[in-house]
Amino acid sequence: MLQVARFCGSLKVTVFLLVAFLLVVFWGVLGQVSMGMDVGTERFFGSFFVWILDVIPVPAMKGLSVLASIHLVLSMIFRMPRGRRYVGLYGIHVALLLLLVGSLVGSGVQMRYNGYKNVTPESAPETSGMLTMFPAGDSLGTYARQLPLDDAGWAYHVEYRGRFPMSPEASIDLFTVTYDPFRFVPYLFALLLLVSIAYFYVGVMIGNHKKI
Image (tube, rainbow, N blue to C red; front, side):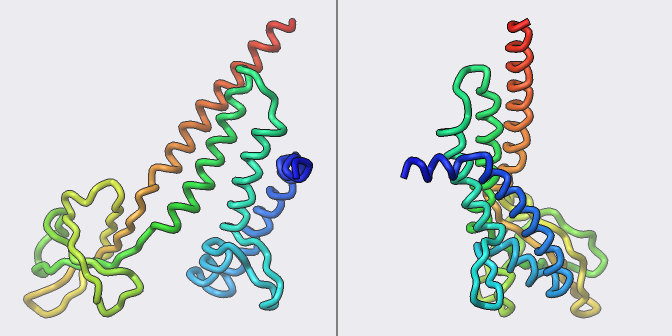
């Protein structure tokens, strides 16, 4: 079992996963063109497996993210060197692990809503007041809820889509609302990655200077 864990954290697996990610991205882009953006995205980037000929399961983007997360942990345990000068290298791996796990968890809790607000035809788009919204897949608005536009919170991203006239006296403003409490993950990843790269570079330069 220990030998298997060491192999799963080896550089050979790193190269295999990088090639697999590139193939899935290439395959997924072709799928988006042939199947449509929504279907192609869900099949290749929003799923754990892609079924070839409806028989053979091949890891899709989410499946590869799980494998890559396990690989990063095993790499830090079995392959990476120890020492304070390598803290930056560990930070780079932790940043990648944060991005992968955050994306997986975020995609599971992310919700998309369609929203509308009753307005008069001549008024400007409002950025305050209550917005009525319902899940994107709920065309009947069965599970409608209210969202305060001026106090939506950082987890909600509200996008104005335009105005639709209902009558000469009334119109509705249409919105798309995305609930994603893990929106901060890409920013935290970028910050941690830059700091870790800088720390690792400084550590390597200091170590090489001492050898000279």
